[in-house]
Image 1 (tube, one colour):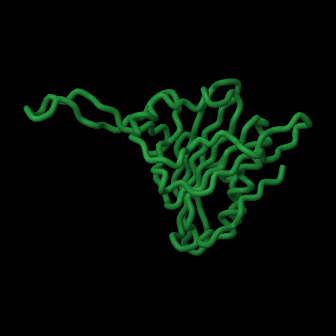
Image 2 (tube, rainbow, N blue to C red):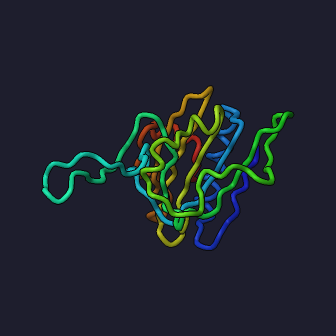
Length: 193
């Protein structure tokens, strides 16, 4: 499968080529029904892995209020509640009956354009969206920032899993941090050389 994520101003060509290879490698492993790739306009850190949003919780520290907003990371994966202003291009490929992939005219987008409170995301479960899917978020502006990040969620037979990796360029691109996956697997799927 050939994945073509359009190069935009600010993208590092080598990093984007490795990202295309990653998506193609992951798709060839599980043959998901749906593949979504979303460009996030700025670098994001590992806190987004499993991050579901902010929820109201009981707070007993003041007479002025009895609730507070706390960040929530749930066991069941929900779509990350990125600010709509940070969400760039969303690309979709669906598996056809012959096994190949192609775009569709009006896919169901995972990120809406309107600003909402992230608490509404707490029940926006990935496994309810599809029983077979690959979701990849990547940071833009890799040429200027000299760093990049990738968040991957996959759903296989209704079970969702996720991982995060960040990359740094100090003369050459290298893996900086990984969470939820081993570094060797990322190196195999994300060829930086």
